[in-house]
Length: 382
Ligand code: PLP
Picture 1 (cartoon, rainbow, N blue to C red):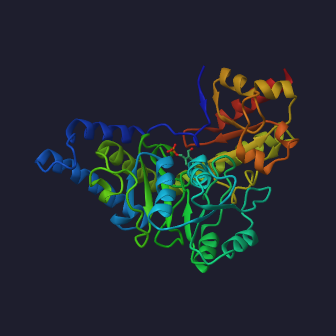
Picture 2: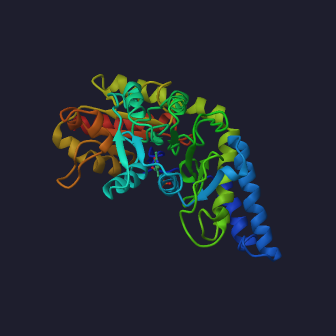
Picture 3: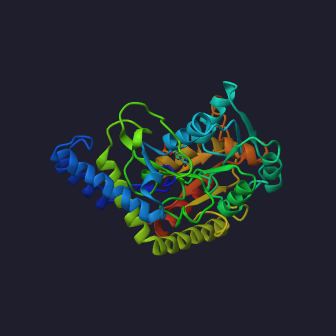
């Protein structure tokens, strides 16, 4: 049975060129970049070359990129740094952010260190700008707003310019979790009103275990992991040179093919929408997932009405049929409270219909979409 992998928002396959490049680093550039001898220096040169190229892709300078082990660490480091080193005591976020953002914010709030406000979002998962304005105006103290660019469950895109400009007009910092957009959209951080952004290589066909922070140079984050002087003392620990080089190679490939890949994926998503609409006329899409302009070309979040007993076994059935996709929404067991995103934007009744997140890469084909629709049809009719 051939697999149909439609869970690319969870992770992507590693590009063969990336693996080749990483292999060569592991074999020939194994030195510790902090060592002063030739083996160390050549590893350091590879690392800094990758940093320079990454800076070019995002139009930023080398002191604005900090390597981390993943997207979660990057979000944690920004929030920790904003609190510990920039003196931010008031944070504004939305209830549908990734746990990588909600976790550290709730932790600081639980300890009584910060004020944390959740702005209102509408049924599409978009921020209520009037509410954001209100929250930004509540006091004169310096604030940070954390709002993700592309929602990982819905695919909904927020307007970084609009949020960023509003933050600037209130002298607030703006952190955007860009994990689902780096490598899939062109982002020039020098032109965007964003203070902090993040990336995770395994979301764009790079290796797991590596990501980075973009931190606009006027905002010095300070140390997050203490030890050596790596990453200018902000994140100590011997650098994973093979991962950094692999991430850079994945970004190079992603940016080189961006226009063509976006076109391919928009076409594939639109085909998927057409097939689902034809086969299941009572289908509902979550957020703005079916809008090709207001949501990412990589994500489609869909609810297909079916009986409760069918809904309960849907994930298992899809897996048995070789379809890898992700479920959010209705509880599948007593201990599963479902997706916090779906719980927020859907009513309890709407949440009874199972949500399926299909997330695409250029490896997916229209034939796979046909198979997926047939598998769903057979299951619902069985
Ligand atoms: N932020 C978003 C929006 C994500 O989708 C993810 C991963 O799914 C993360 C952060 C965490 O990234 P990582 O898996 O690299 O820790």
